[in-house]
Image (cartoon, rainbow, N blue to C red; front, side):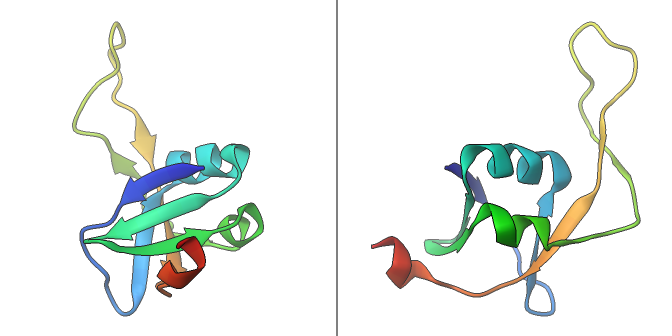
Length: 86
């Protein structure tokens, strides 16, 4: 189970980087922590996310590489299901 933190919720949605989503699908799901409130997404729910068109360039380059990696954001409606995790 992959874990990540979110620092903001915009218009009732939370964004996650696409490579984190891909890793989480392989690891059986994702837990998003928003200042102690958690949201759990199954691999099926992760695949239903809406990918933004904009491509972001990472601030940091890869070791030994000239190019910096890129990523897109995947948007999910925020729904706290912390009770399910307890």
